[in-house]
Length: 348
Image (cartoon, rainbow, N blue to C red; front, side):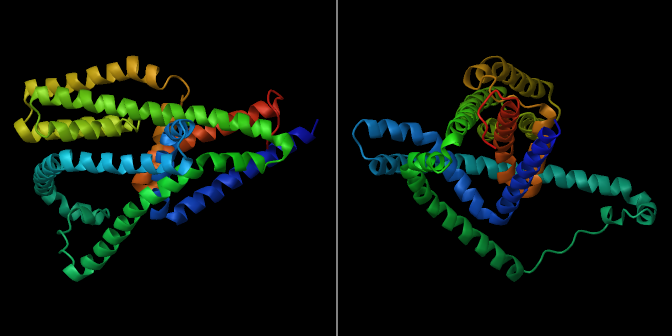
C-alpha cells in the first residue's frame, strides 16, 4: 500500500524535472526557438494537405516543396498588397498615440511638481528625474544592425526548415513510436492522439476564430468611423489568440485611438463598444463552439498566468506559445492520472 504513493511522487518529480529542463533549453535557445516554433506550426497545419497530395501520386518532397512555395508566395502577396496601407496606418496611429501619452506624462509631471521633495524622501525620485539624453548613434547602430541581420537570416531559413519538417513529418512521428518499447507503443499512440486533438482544436480552430474576428472588428470599426480601423481590426483579431488578455488590449487600443481622434465622443465610443460586444457575442456563442469546441478548456486564471509567465520568460514568442504548452501539459497530466487509475496502459 505504501509503494504506490512513492511511485507517484517519483513520477511527478521526473515530470517536473523534465519540464524544468525543457524550459531551460527553450530559454537558452532564444531567437532560434522562434524560427522552429513558426516552422513547426506551419508543418503541423499543412501536414494533412501534404499527405493528401502524396495520396494523389506526388512524392512527399514535391508536395512539401509546393506547399512551402505557396505559403511564401501567399505571405509575400499579402504583404505587397496590404502591407503599405497597414504600415502607413500603423505609423500614423503610433505617432498619434505617442502625442497623447507625451501630453499625459507632461500633465502628470506638472501635477506632481509640488510633491517632488516628498517623492524624493520616500524613494520615488525616479518619477521626477529629467528625461535622459539619447545615446550616441554609434551605441545604437551596432546592436540594431546585428538584430536586423539575425532577423533577416531567420526569415530566410524559415521556408527551408518548414520544407524539411513537412517532408519528414510522418517519418519523425513513426520513428518516435517505433523507438519506444513495444509495450509502451499503445499508450504513446493514445497520448499522441489526445495531444493532436487538442493542438488541432487550438491551432486550426483559433486561427479561424482570429480571422473571422478580424473581419468583424474591421467592418464594425470602419462603419463607426474610427481612424486606422483596418489596422486595429487586424490587430484585435490577432490578439484573439490570447483569450481575455488580448481582448482587453484591443479595447484599450481602440478606445485610446478614439479619444485621440474625437475626444470622448459619445457616438464613436458607443460604436466601438457595440463592435466589440457584438463580436465577442458571436465569437463565444457561435465561432468558438463550432471551430474549437470544448477540447481546450482552461481556467481563465490559469490562462492569464500562463500568458504572463510566457511573456516574462520568452517575450512575444512566449506569450503566443504559452496556452498551447499549458494545454498539452494538461493532456499529459490527465493521461498520467488515468494510467495511475488503470484506465489506460502505463506509459510513464
